Length: 179
Image 1 (cartoon, rainbow, N blue to C red):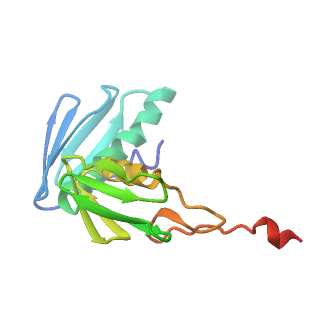
Image 2: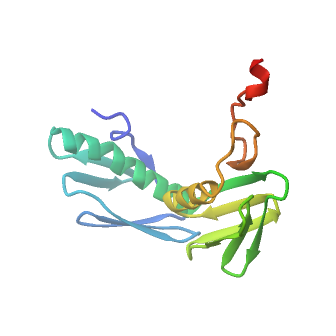
Image 3: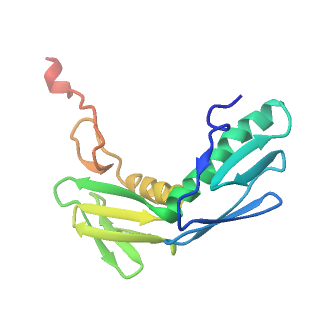
């Protein structure tokens, strides 16, 4: 049996979960999230605890079991605590500025790159080289951070680029070091 799928989730105070057939709505102090899961998975709520059960032992059902449990756990954490990713920009002249509902990123191209901020996320440009992305959906926060990072991935040779805070970039030697 899936270790993640059979994990029992504690529902914190202030979080309300509504279950209708195979549709779950999680509401908390930070917002509300919805998720429709497979009819092969059953969700039981008892005594402020949530448990996912599978209806058969087929391979696809086993795969969905852990995924459903993990998604519901991420929703509970999202509406109660929220998620945050921090991005660092390294390089001479590389910077970011927030202009209304867009972020302008200058990252060594001949033109600035404009990125539209999604409605469900809060973006804060702390310094021109630091961006903080926060929201209640782990998937939305991670995807937006990855899209920002893809504008100029960190180079293993120079160390310049856009990277997550705390990310370790393994540096490589250049051609001149081989002589």
